[in-house]
Length: 590
Image (tube, rainbow, N blue to C red; front, side, top):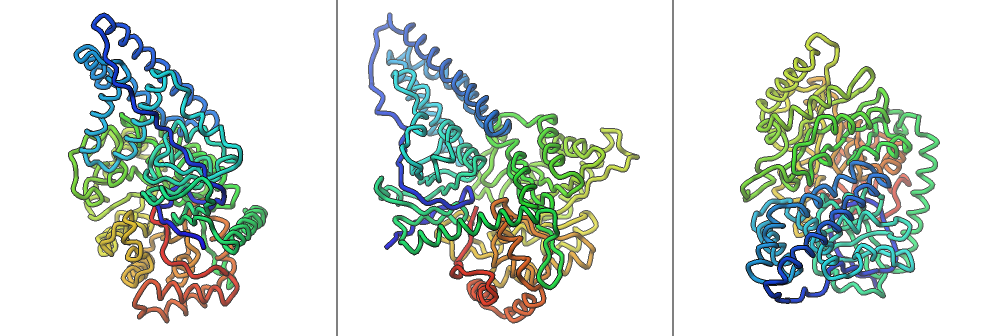
């Protein structure tokens, strides 16, 4: 019988294969003392090791930019900065000169000090910075100890396998071969870690935060990994393996069929027109979205431009990224979400005191409005990216007051003026991301300041139910189909229609077949989903009747739980041959 472990989905997709454990740490650094006359030699050794590590990182950045994309290559900028960090250098040299220890021991002590300070900072991004620091530590020490490069680990596998380890350093991730590495399971890590970002760009399924339970996974085991839900099945049964292969074959057939239908509209069986757009994390993903028939981009996350950077991204860098996606979707909507940082995404250029609850703290539009040097750069790049044919929209996250939308409009007006566009016809539609209970309650007051509404089910679920979406213990409570949320979804439909605001859904619920069916029954007609979910969601919509789903949802007006809603909708879809898998319990929390 298979054993089930739970983590957090970080890169969508499913994988089946044998285990290959990876440990890229190195043995204990020897405590070797030196004589005073050896100090200069150790200083020189340390300088050479740093130079070689810096050369490797620079070369890896170039290779990654060429192989995956220029923006993915930028994740190595933070490592280069760490290697040249004055504090790291001077601290190491002080240990050598003052304590007469060898360069490797001095460097290891200094890294340990930095690690402790990062951990004590309590910033939500510490996991990601620690992964980079660990990568730098292993690389420099490998040079000092004369060991082979640890990233060679990923090229030694004899057969395709699933990597299992504690974390995924960028230097390892950048060398992953999707033909040899079927998936990755980590005990720690986060969705925003640099190594995970690279694996996601390569299309490799990843599960993070699986905890100490993965220590029981052995090299002789086989895993069935779901990078969307975070589920890990150890030694799956023959029926589970058969189901996996069947799902892979169906997905392949579905992709081929949908590519032939890519230019056709997505309509329900009773003729109701819908729009299915793509969520993008990185510019290069636009090509796959186009190939799979996405009706534009409903959520283009811009955080890749800031995460891991020590300085505010330049206007030209942003302009290049935004134009790349607009050119992939000429004249179709591309909805750019302004920087949604804070919470679990803190760039290195933000120097912040610890927050007891960063998800309820200084984040998203609050940061942008307080930092015009950050926000204005993004607004200027967005306006310039539109050009003559671009159809760009701006989506403002984490709004809870009318004042935030009013000030956003004022900032945008100032940008128009600074670019000499006061009298031109360029005006970018501005929307509000409804992901706080306050935004739901005051949607009528926000309406005069917005052109469209995007329902963000992830954070809204978290805040309405007081359940941290990253806490595995609250998985059953974190339910986007909870009756309280269904009532809010209906209210958003009603208010959006009353104020003639274009309405879409961009949260994880839009990528869940049962969730989409429920939302169709509540009146939603526009969805933005992950690229991997595009084929499944478009196919589902073509095989359901809005009239029937409306009737199903009306019967659930008095449902007492999300599970009751999920079972009823799933049963309806199964009865019509749309779904064959067992009713799901819970969704991805990423």
